Length: 128
Image (tube, rainbow, N blue to C red; front, side, top):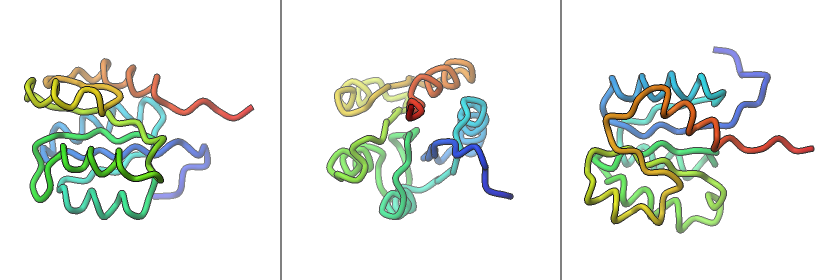
């Protein structure tokens, strides 16, 4: 795959359900993001150590390291201060607990159009 010449912002999709990850991937691509899917918490932390995504779409229940631990890591890393986090979960209690640390909390099931539209709003504004 060739590199995108439009310099779209990077969105990391951290989701262990392959079907949901594919839907999230399509929605974020349609919102003009370059995307990468990560299906494991430990792999997500390794990726966050080497890159600064514009947006992270984060499931809370992951193998390896939980989504809430990844969220804590993002919020405590100065390099990731501008990274927007969209939590995606069916766990309403956990969603409420973490709402203040996320930019957007999405309760599953999430529609394609809802995710695409919200992701579009989180895109960084172009420099003048």
